[in-house]
Length: 293
Length: 282
Image (cartoon, rainbow over all chains, first blue to last red; front, side, top):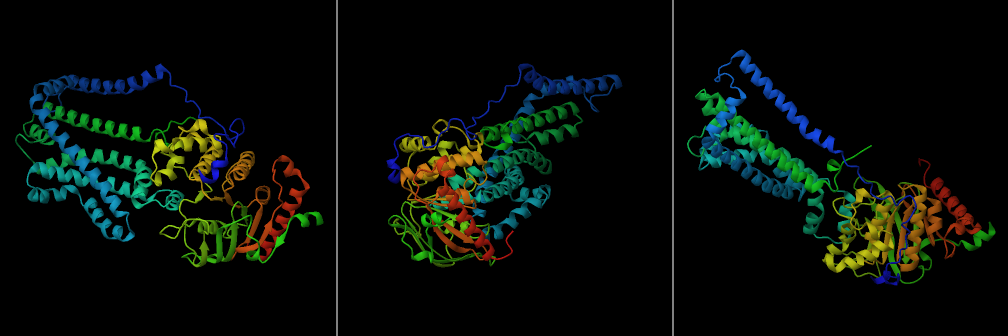
C-alpha cells in the first residue's frame, strides 16, 4: 500500500460510532398478511365481477353465441379448440420472443455503436428514426415479398417495432452516465472497453429495462398486426390468423378464446420483463426501491 | 497581530519559494486554461507542491481552483504552460500512472455497486482480482470507519458515509497525491468537522500529499500547512500563505490564538483577492 503502509492494520482513523453520519440502513416494516392477501384478492374480485356482468348480459338478453358468447361458452371453445389454438399460440410466442431477443441484441449493439462518436450518431440515427416512424403495417407487404417465408416476415416486422424503443432508451442511457464517474475512469486510465463494461452498461440498466418493457409489449402487438397483414394460413399460422379465421367463420366463441390466449401471452411478457427489471434494479435504483415517508 | 505575522510567513512571488518538505510532486509553470466557450478559467498559474504537503486552494467561485485541480489530476490539458509530476511514473498518455486519488464534490459512487465494489474499482481497472484485493479493501474501509458497511449499497448510506467511501476509493491505490475538490461542501457542519479531522489524521499517518479545494477560510486554515489564495476573473493565484506548523489540530487548536490569527489573515487576504479580482463578484 505504498504510502499508506505506515498506518497500523485495521486501525480506524475515522470513528464510526455516534455522530451524524453513522445512520444505519433503516429496516423496512413488513406489510401485514391481510394487506398482502387483499392485494391479490382485490384484482381478482374486480375481474370476477366483470365476467359475472358479462354472463348476466348474455343470459338476460338471450344473446346468440355468434354475437356475444357467454363466458362458459368461451371456456368450452378454449377446451374444444385447444388442439388448434395451442400450436397457434406457440407460434406467436416463438415469433414474439425471437423478435424481442433480436431487438435486444440489435438495439443494444447498435446503441453502443452509435455512441462511439458524434459523427456515427449523426450519420446513422436518422435511419433508425425513419424505420421507426414509418407505420410497420405499411412496410409489411414489402417485407412479405422479400422475406423467404411468412414466418420470417412476421419476425422481421416484430423485430423492427421492438427494436427502436430499446435502441433509443439504450442511447439515452449510455449518454446519461455521471460525468464525474467518467472522469474517474479516465483518471485511472480505464480502457474504452473497461469504461463500457464497468460503467456505461451498468449505468444504463434502468434505461435498458424501460426499453425492454416497452419492446416486449410492442413485439407482441407487431407479431399480431403483421400476421393480420400477412394473412398466413396453414399449419404455421399464429393466434392472429386463428382470430381472423374464427371471425370469417362466425365462430365467435373461438375468437374470444384466441383473444384470451393473446392477452395471457401479453400478461406473461409483462410479468417476465417486470421481474427481470426488478431483479436487476431493486437493490440500487430509485424506481424499484420501496419508499415510505 | 504581530505575533501572528511572525508565525505566518507571507511569500511572494509565489513560485520562487522553497518547495515544501521534500521532493516535488507537482510542478506547474504558467498554466493557462481557456474553455471552448472562450472563458479564461485559469491564467498563468505557477505552483510547486512538495511531497507530504497539505495545500488548500482557497478562493471565490469562478477563481479556477477546481480547474487547477483537474489539470493537476491530468483531467483536461492546460491551454498553455506546462504541468509535470516529477515523482511519478508517466504513462504513454503523458499522465501520472496510479499516483493520483481524486475526491469529487459529490461522492460520485456507482449506485449499482456495493461499498466494497466501489472501493474495488480502481484496483479492478488495474486488472487486480477481487479475491486478491479483499484484504486491502477491508483495511482501507476500516481506516475510514466503514468496515461494517462493505456490503451496503450507496443509497443506504448517509451523506458523510458516502464521502468516506469516496475517500477510501481514492486511497485504495496508495496514491502519492490526494486531490479533493470541495469534498465536504454539501455536508452539515458537524459531519464536516468530523471528516476534516479524519482527513487530517489520514494525512498525518500516511504522508500522502493533499491538495484540498475549498471556499471555507476556516476549513482551509484548520487543515492545511499552506494556503494558495486565488482570485476570479481571470482565475489566478493571488497569494501563497504558509500556515502554522501546529501538529495537533483539534478542538484546542480551533480555539487557539494561533488559529484565530491565521484565519484572520487568510480572511483578509481572501477579501483583498476578491476586491482586487474585479468588482463583479457576487
